[in-house]
Image 1 (cartoon, helix red, strand yellow):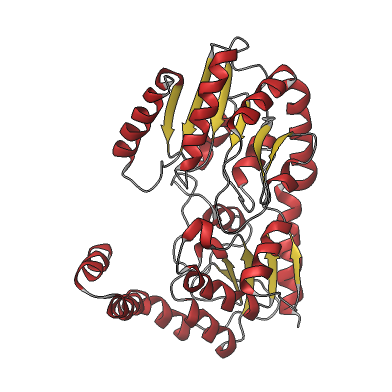
Image 2 (image 1 turned 90 degrees about the horizontal axis):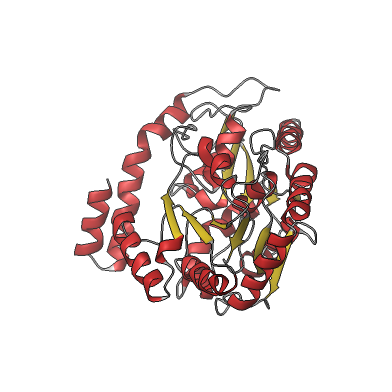
Amino acid sequence: MRIFLNLIKFLFPYPIRQLLSYILMVFKNSPRWAGIFLTKRPPDGKIYVSYGINHIPCQNEIAYGGMIKYQLLQNVFPNSPFRFNIQYIVSSVTPRDWSQILWLKERKKVRLVWNQNGVWYKACYGPGYEKVNYPMKRMLHAADYVFYQSRFCKLSADHFLGERKDSWEILYNPVDTKFFKPNDSDPDPKKIILLLGGNQFPYSRFEHAVRILSLLIKYHSNVQLIVTGKLGSLPQKEAIQNSLHFAKRLGVSDHIVFLGPYLYKDAPDIYRKSHILIHTKYNDPCPTVVQEAMACGIPVVYSNSGGVPELVGDEAGIGIPARLTWEEELPPDSQAMAEAVLRIYDERTRYGEAARERAVKYFDLQPWLKRHKEVFEELLCR
């Protein structure tokens, strides 16, 4: 399928590409939709959830973003792709056949629950962001219930998708605080170990982190930066070569360790290798990497933008001031980030304990699952 889509992009102008891509998508999904229409409706009162896809990666497969929430939910509400009465969709993994989902909602009286992450806008997408936002806009306003992942997610959705009038609430992403736990000991008391977690989209996240590293080395010679995930859109091998070239120009290539994409089950050990998470992304709506780090007792230095200030609060890290704009990406001040790292490192025990306490209090998985169960049951009783 991917080969056909690439050929279409190469051979045809945009309107024809869109039409042919839609036809291919319908053809690809036709077995699933046939199965849905031929399957009887579930019995009343019992929750059957579909996540809009046939397969959700298990914890031995690499997954991130909205897919992680599906993984956590399906432990309680198994994915039922053909027989369901609840359709649960996270905006960051909106299926391409979203219009058929809306049609199904009316035809088979399926309840739609929408989990709204961030939106696209000029600074992070460029021209044409309105077209990419359109499916989110339709799904958000058609849903029977909406979870916004943060107050910032609500703010940006109101601005670009329109304010929703029906049922909604703000529910922060969850973290399994029994799985993500702090270290029993300092990973290396003679070294400052920083973590740049998650995937590096946009790639500027990595560049900002390297600049911070180059400043820190002037104050403390024994500093290490651990970098995880994909590095922008290039193939990983090529991306690492380019990244090392950039780091060499700043004289810090020997201080960087690239771990690449990782499995969910390995995430706690990666967090526990570090002292501080540096989160350089501007206007990040609700990054789970921040919550997972906090659950592991790792404080955060971050751009004071997006939904991150809501997650970290005043006690679990230090935010670097940033004004809100949709027109440009505003990188955090590297010098201020470096100074914040040094400040937290000197008080890392206090900050780490506060981070863990906040994660358990506000983001634990069990209340999140309980709230979903309550909403699903309320919808099916209507």
